[in-house]
Image (tube, rainbow over all chains, first blue to last red; front, side, top):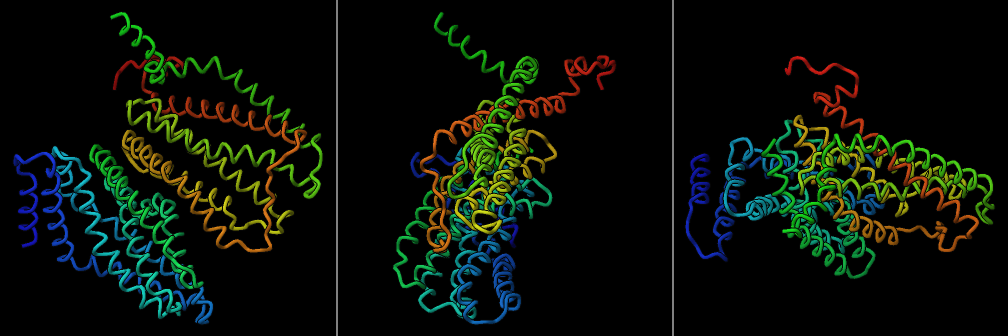
Length: 247
Length: 260
């Protein structure tokens, strides 16, 4: 059943249909988006595993550093953010993998439309199935780690915005390493330093709220980072895909 | 027509530069001069800065490490841009040599970043009382080191050399876009968390008697960097082109009888 729907979805994109020039990219985008979302929902482990990883490692933290509520509440925002970063990164390794292996990535690259929109569609799906659930789950973990109540909303909002940027930036790394046999650690090594601004402003949002200040500016900067990443990262990822396909 | 021919002529040097062989032969003549100038400047700057420049009123003699630290930090950052620009030239004009220079620049830049971090730590012990502080500039340098290591790791991961070249060039470019953002955000992060006891010495005004040796050292480091970069590039060229006729002749081997 699964493979049938893939074939169906791909065929519809590849069809050479004459359409007006302006919305030319849009139909391909939505078809691919729907296909990817269906695939992601059917491969349930891809959604559940990053979440389980996130929860499990965060549960280990108090065991490692001690259960004192004050220390935990000071570290909660940072811990949750670092773990969200790690689980996004780990789940990103497979972003282009299956498409690369079955050749559909090459089909996408051979189309006349730019690779920008297919990449954006895949990243959007990745964010919907990993970033958003992480963000929704985060207040619960915040409660377990004794994060102050003032931090729940900022944590959720900053994670919603931040994980989208993380998915976009990580897509560049995933595209660069897709042709390699075991890219896991290398992907983390090349992408981690690029995550620094998102991490800083993500934890900054929560910290500002906990200190009793407005957290609007930090969220605005996270939004600005997201806007820049959405404009530039798919371009870089598209270039990286073409490099990887040459390999 | 004539204009067109002129334009072609003026681009010739650029295309010639793309040939590893031309680069290798040209730089053979430059190397001794460049090396001598670099070593001379470094020797003069070191003796001047470490031996003759006046003591700092607050820090005593320990400030003298800036004569190594500042030039190294300068070039660590400039080196990343040099690497990224070479990568971009390689990607745009498909120039083989440019990728070789990019690959050569990565480890040199990483070492310079490490030197800057190490000298900073050594200076921090007598000045701040601790080797490591999560200060904005130190943290940025550490992230720069990670960026360098990432490029090096990626360029080595591909079995096909050209793919490694292109992939690491793209990563270097992505890093270039990110460096200003990283620096700004780390700066902001530091002002947020800055402990009150720690006071940074802002070297906004520096006496000429300390400044001239510093300038000498910076110039010396730049020349030294160019020298080492060319040496390393030449080494990589020989490694890559070892099958070609000119390399075999250069190494004194007989021309390959069988072109296997």
